[in-house]
Length: 225
Figure 1 (cartoon, rainbow, N blue to C red):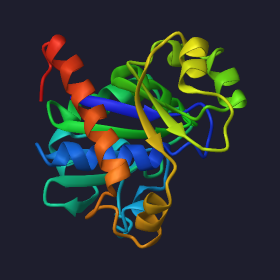
Figure 2 (figure 1 turned 180 degrees about the vertical axis):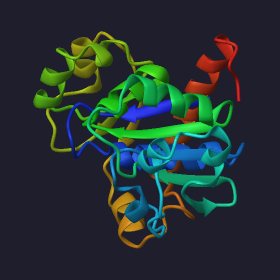
Figure 3 (figure 1 turned 120 degrees about the vertical axis):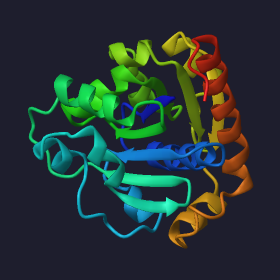
Figure 4 (figure 1 turned 45 degrees about the horizontal axis):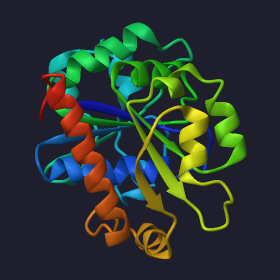
């Protein structure tokens, strides 16, 4: 299955959720993490691969060469960076990526969808919206068609926020499926470069619930992993 993780506002924890979700998928099947936001090599402590999606597109987007892109994170997980693509990369390029990944489990870190390619990838994948209980994030989401169509909403909880999960659900008109806390153990794992090999329990448990929610939806659509 394919899913795209994104947020209407930067700093919401999107890349951490995308990394953890790809690691969970990789426990079940070979998985590709496509990094369109730019932070995954640092987050997962992986050397920067030489070529990415943009380079592959520029070289002719040959489906058989896609598997050689990126770098290994674990034996079951491959990280593919965005590479250098033009500002006009969009519908056709997104279709080429979708065709190339085929039935392989794929997680796209679309960040804040800062490129047309990221926006079109969100439209072509199961959409995972990551959001904080933040007025500005909710304000943007209520004016965002892709937020209204999100398949799953992940709430990143911060103790200093006044808004609740119920407030988020009321603003989006969609249920919060998973809540992930902002926790020191997650920050320490990222800072120490060990996230790829040891997910903290406070992250591992909700991301497993997220994976099960996505698998249930995929099974209902006839697209199970």
